[in-house]
Length: 538
Image (cartoon, rainbow, N blue to C red):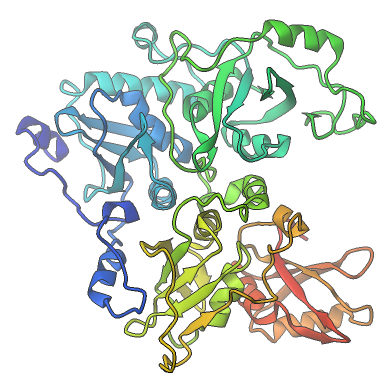
C-alpha cells in the first residue's frame, strides 16, 4: 500500500495534510481589522492558495455519513473518479475527473458553506494529486462510486448496489418538483437553468397545489432525471430557502399546449402563448391529481437527500461559480434589498493591482451586483480592500460573480469578510483617499424598488449592454469610445430604438475595464451612458 491507503492502515496519523486551503471556511480565525492595520491576520486569508488538485479533502463529516452523500458534494461539478472514506476520522477524500472540476468545486464552496445532514463540512485541496486506494479496504465506497458512474455514463448500476439501496434505475424521465420554504420567487426559467446542467430539458409545467409551488420537468432521458434527482434533492436554490423536493413522476410524457411563463415545450417553440388560458390540458390536470407523492421523505431505494446551507451549486461544471444560474441570481436580486440578509455584507477583495485600483473603480465594478455602501483600500496592504454591500445577499452575489475575474491585469480573489461594517476614518484624519463612503451615491443601480436592473444581473462577459445613448451618437462614436479604454471592439449592434446597443470586446477582462471606465460616462445633453454585462452574444 502507498499514498493515502497507507494512512488507513495506520489509523490516519495525519489528521489533515493541508490546514490552509482554497476555502475561507477552513480559516475560521481569519479576519482583517477595519482600519487595515492588522496585516498579519490578513495573511491568513491570503495564504489559502494551496496548489489546485483534483483530489479534494473533506473534513468534519457527520457520523454515519454515507458514501453517496459525500459523492453528491462533488457530482454537480463533474465526474467523480475515486473516493476514500475515513469514517473513524469523519473525513473523506474525493477525486474528480479533472483539475478544472475540482477548482470549480472549491471556488463554489468558498462562497457557500457545504453542509451534509445540516452539518457544515470543510472542503479543501489535498496535497495528493491522485487517490490510490486498496479496494479490499474500500469495497463499499467503490461499489457506490461504480453505481454513480454508471448513471453518469448512461449505464445501469449493478444489481448488488441496487439491492443495497444506493441507486435504482430511473422509472421516468419526468421529475415532480416541490419548492419548500419559497421565500423568493422561483420561475420556470430558473428551473430550466438549474436542471439543464444534467441533460436536455424538454418540457416544464409549473402549477400551485395545496398552496405550494410545484413543477413537472421532463428530460430527454431517464438517466438525466436520475442524476438531477441524486444531486439536487434537498438542495436550496437560494440561501436557506427555496428547498427542492424531487421525486419521479408517474407520468412518462408531458403534454404542453402553451409556451408561456407557466409552461414550456422547448421542442416546440411554435406553440401559442395561450392568451391567459390554462397551460395544462384537462387530461394532464387529471394526471396531476393522482401524481401526488409527498417529497418530504426519501422514496424507497433512493439515496438519502442532503441539504446545503447556501445557494445551489449552479455552476455545475462552469468555470465561474454560480455563473450558469444568472436567472436565479436575477430572481434573488429582486428581493436583495428587503433586509433579509444572508450574513455579513462586507467583502474582502485581494490580489488587486495596487497601482491602478481606486475606491471608485471597485464601487463601479461591484456595483453591478448590489449597492456598494463603503470601500476601504487597506493602508498597510494596498492590494486588498474591504467592500461593504447593502446586505449579505448582495455580497454573496458579487462574490460569486467576481471571484477569479481579471481586473487591471490581475486575477482578484473575493471572499466574505468577518467584519459587519467598514469603518470610516476618524474626522480630521487623512487616509490618502483610501476610504470612501458611497451610501448616498446617486449611481446605485438597485435603490429603486421594482427596477428592471434586478432582472438583468449577469456574470462578467465580453458583451456589454449599453443604454441611455443619445440620438445623435453613431456606432463609430461608440466603437471609438470603447477602443480608447484599451481594448478591441469585436462587434456592435444597435437595438431598434437606437437608445440601447450591444458591444462586444475581445475579452472579458477588456469588458470589465470598459465598464469601470465608461459606466456613467457623460455623453452630453444630460445623457449618462449606462453599461452592464449582457448574457447575449452578437
